[in-house]
Amino acid sequence: MRIISILLSLLSFNYFLSQDFVKLRSPLEGDPGFFLDDWEEKKNPKISYSKSILHTENEITVNAIVDFSKPLVKISKYIFGNNLGHWSNRKILSNDDFIFNLKDISIPVIRFPGGNASNDYFWNASSIDQCPEGTPPIIYKSNFNKTTPPKLGNQGSYRTRPVDFYELLLRTKATGSICINYSMALYSEIEDENERLEIASDYAASWVKEANIKRGLNIKFWEIGNENWGKWQAGYEVKDRGIIDPQKYGQHCKVFIEKMKKIDPSIKVGVVGYQKPKSRDPVQSRWNELVLPEIIDVADFYILHDYYAKYGAVLTPSDMLNAVDTTYSHIRVVNEAIEKYTDKKANHLPIALTEFNTRSFAKMSNGDGVTNVSHCAGLFFSHALGEIIRQGYGMAMMWDIENGYKDGQDHGMFASSKEPNVDWLNPHPSFYHYYYYNKCFGDTYYESSSTSKLIRIHTSTFSSGEIGIVAINISSEEEVLSLNIKNKSTGKIAGVFELSSDSPSSRKVAINSTVTNKEAGGPQNFLKIKANKIEIRYNNLKLNLKPYSANYIVIENE
Image (cartoon, rainbow, N blue to C red):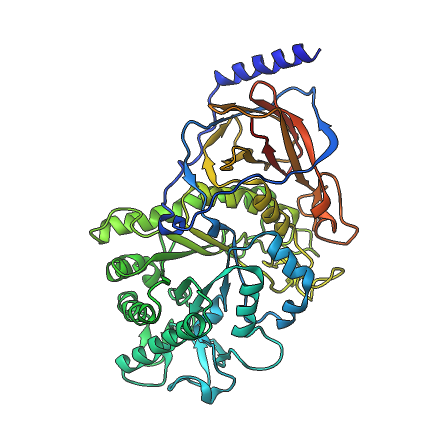
């Protein structure tokens, strides 16, 4: 019977070969560039097997092929970063489970202190009189409809200070990406523009000196401002001075970069870019055109942000998961601008996605869609991380480590203290996908294709020869996958970790059918969960894919 089953599988596969495979967006719009300079081999994924052997007699519904004759791109370790907001309670450092969780995902880079907060943040001040000369007591945003006092890095006993951030980097062995306050060069009360610029750039350089020279932290990445093209940013519009000038921002960046690198020539400095092909906003529509010519010879990388959905939208599972297909487009926007407005070729600057997430305005209490803390949001990361690698980004940071619950509109990887019925810093479903990427995905990416756009495959190899695969079912129907491996010999066994849930809107995620007894998150003993086995026959594996599930697969070396 088994021989007959194998023959039927092969016949089914040959049938599908005669059909058109789904044409997805072309891969590798970008180039990771220097982000691969410290690329490291990954070897020997440690997979323990359960006694369960997965086998299905069900008819194949989807075929996929992975061709290992030519690698697509080496995988930058900086793809798996995150953001830490200065508003987080510094007691995070005394939560050992939280620290161990970050270490378990081998977090490579953590960005600080914001977000939007970066442009009104004064890193070494505990009172207003310790801020640089010209700092106003009130800073205006959003067409002067919102105000904020300067955010003081060393104020109070609650918020995370720079020294707490440094300790987190040391304990997790991550590097940092510090987003410095650019906008004080615009809103400072000092009237002379050149003097404002000198003070602001000196202040940025002083942070480099404190962190990397005095403390020897070797914080690698530095960003000049955050989303400065947005009306919600401090300094976007200043009374009697008008709206931000993108060209002047680019010119100012050259001064910042020169001073910061004079302190530490080893750092990499990024400049804010704009990601959309069209905008009615006059600043956004010409941002890349005016900024790139100024910084193209001095910046190390270009910064984009992506939240993969229209602002204010209540997302369905289909909305959330299919939005990942736009990952390529923002790199293309930058490359087209580089070629049109500078004398450089496309991909001259690698791109860092220093904030990304899904963004749904659904609420848990309404049951009106899938939220940012749902199982579906976890699947979003399962697909997005693979596509970010596939499209050639050099670095990516999830937004963010811990945020505010807001009835499910919470971007945090870990639960806010305001989330009901779970402990503070309880992992959200997204955490488990980062964990299994770290465990099961290798160091080099290979392109794959399938006969269904609802089954997404991301494939890698380890330098020791194993294959790491992420197979994601973004549909509401169970599918049966047949995956054929070309131009590579394999062992006879694969291990599978299936991440699923009884509903895409659930706050829970099951790992190989093991579920938490808490109200949200994943199993408490996830580190001890063993992989289920699949037999590999004639370089082919066959696997049931539950609705809205991700399967992390490691295929043994020959």
